[in-house]
Image (cartoon, rainbow over all chains, first blue to last red; front, side, top):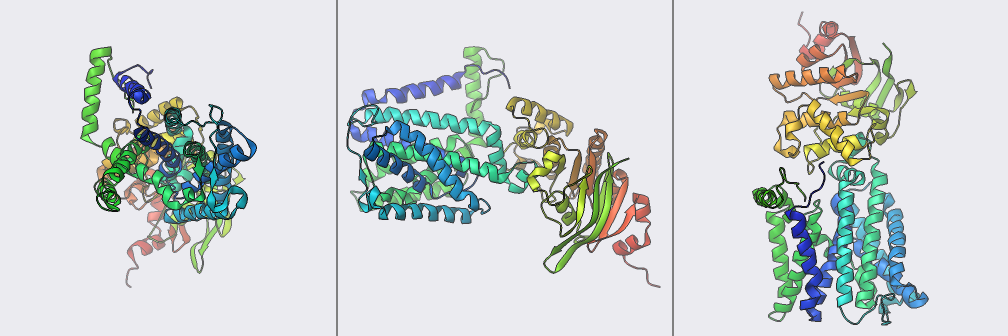
Length: 341
Length: 243
C-alpha cells in the first residue's frame, strides 16, 4: 500500500460530513430533525448488527433485546442511582457485550436459521423478564425525567441529539471500517465464507464469534443508551423481535458484507418509511407498510446482494472510479490515483 | 530421510460403517506421497483425520515426533499442516488477494501487520501464478484457477506438510501439467506433500511413494511403478482376467 494522499474522494466525504453537520442551521423543524436522528441511530444499530450479521455471517434477529438491555441499564442507573448516561454507555457496552457473548457462546455451533431462532428466543426472554420485573417498571416502563444538561444527556431541543447521533455514526463507521481492514476482520470474513476453511488456516471460530458478538451486542447497547435518553421513556416493547428488523433490513437492502451497506441502507430506508407513513397512512390505513414492503421485496428480488453488493461488481462503479481518478489527476496531478472505498 | 508423518493402525467407524480400517503408512520429509484408490475407498476420511476434521476411532497420527491425534482442527495450521478441500471452498465474497491474505494472517506465519501480510500474500500469488488475478473474485475465474487459489491459500499459512485433496480433478491435460509443475516447485521449497489423486499421470509423475487404498484398507504401497504392476491393484482397477 502506498501512502494515503488527499484525493477527490476524501474531499467529497468531508463535504458530505460538513453539510450534514450544518443541517441544523437550516432545518429547525423538530419533525425533520427527528427523522435525521432516527436515521442516525438506526444506522448505528445497523452497523453494530453487521459486525455479527454482515462480517461474521451470523444472522441475529435478537439485537432489539440487546439494545433494550442497554436502554434499561441507563434508565435504571440514571433514575435510581443518578449515573450519567455517558458513563452508562461504557457500562452498557461492557455489560451487554459480556452477557450476549456468554449467553450466545453455546449457540455458536448452530448455523443459519437455527442461530437466528435462538437469538429471537433470547430477546423474547429479556422482554418477558422486564415485563414482569417490578423494579424495572414492569409493563409500564420507565420514564426518564428531564434534567437538562450535557452531563445528563437530556435536552428539550433535538439539535444536541442530532450532533450526538451524527457523531456516533461516524465513530461506529470508523470502528466497523477498522475491524473490516484488520486481522480480526479477516478472521470474521473467513468464518462467514466457510468455517471449515477458517479452521484449516488456523482460525478458531469459537473465539472470533465470541469477539464479534461482544462487539456487536455491546455497540448496539450503546445505541440503546442513546435511544432511552433521546425518547425519555422506555418499556419492554422495544425488545420485541420485530424491532430487530429495524437493524437487519437496512443492512440487507444496503448490502450485507459490505461496510458501506448498512449506512446506505439506513440512509434510504428510514427516511423512506417515515415519508411513506407521513403521506400514505392518511390515504388508507396500512398503505404505507404495503408500499414499503413492496419496495423492499423488489430490491431483494432483483439485487439479492443489496445495493452495495451490486455496486461493487458493476460497471457503474468502474465508470465512477474512472471519472474520480480523472479529477484526481487533473487537480492533484497524481500518477496513480488512490482507490479509497 | 526422517518421517514427518507416521500413521499407525488408523481406523474410523461411522456408526456401523468402517470407513477406514487399520491403515498405517509414513510420509518422509520433503517427499511427495500419493494416496490412490477407487471412490469410497476412504482416502478423504484419512485426510480428514490427519487434518483434524475427524477424530480417529483408533490409531495414532504422529507428526514430527509428536502425537497429534485428536488435536482440534484450527490448531493444525499452527503446527505447519495445511490442507485443501476436495470440494473447492473459495471465500466467495473476497478477492483472490484477500483469500490468500487470510491464510497469511493466521496459520504458522501469524503476521498481525496487514501491510506485511499483504506483501507476503502477493509473493505467494506470484509463486502460484495468480498475481494478475489478484483483484478478481473467485467466481470470475475458471476451475483451474480456483484450484490454484485453494493451494495458494494453504501455502500462505507457511506449511511444512501440505495435504492436497484431488486438486487435479477436472483439469485438462495441459492444466494438469501446469499443476504438476507447481507442485514440484512447492516441493523444491522444502514442503512435504501428501496428495490424493485419481489422475494416474499426475501420480506417476509426482509421487515418490504411493499408497493404494481399497474398501478402507491399505492394499499396496511402493513406488508408482511397483504399485501399478501389483496384480491386486490391477485387479481392483481393471477387474480379474477370466481364466
